[in-house]
Image 1: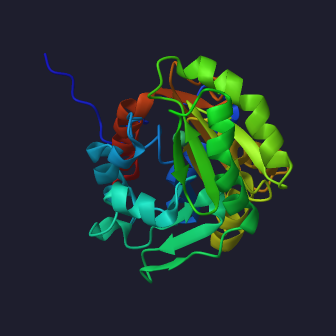
Image 2: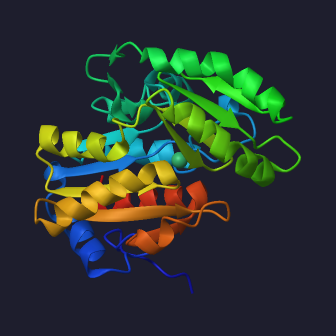
Length: 286
Ligand SMILES: [Mg+2]
């Protein structure tokens, strides 16, 4: 016999914490005052060898298209430049995402669907200096095959396509951190990447600003990597202070398990996140 599930069924998997369950209940009870914020790579978009080939999971963007009109705010919060996330995301021409915001480069850049305009401040001069010194440093380490991605406000070293990415990342960590520090920058480790960038900007600050701007009282945040930890920390702190209810979703991977123990809900990769977003749309009735 075929099981018929009511459309109001809670999205599965369910949160495993009281705080997470309370946040999800708050989203459903008052969606107009809810904020759904999601990382891009490894969260909405499956990780691929060539970052230029990344694309949001089609069912995830379709689910967001449904959810958009129901919630106070839907935002993508990414380390990517906003215009890259916009180009790769397939978010435009989606009627349900006509109020979407993309916060790029960890919140330094912003694009709003309502205006179609991007706010992109000039990059710190120190980034260009580090970029100019990296090829020599890589050659000295015998790691000239490491791919450099110049993002303007950051430079990213990609080890994914090397024979032994983890070993390369270990050897790069110290020298790259020293180079970054000497220019007042930070070197942050991610999934087969090291990113050199301005440490004064992070996803935690981006989330705090979004909450303040939107007046959201309930927040769902989904991420997969170490760059998402400041968002987790900010939301945990705001939750502890009673400022918001927050549901922290970890998009789990074998490469990066760090977020799972800190989360209220873990899903297995972008595919399962897309499933979850579809069920959230069902639960919201949108
Ligand atoms: Mg990510």
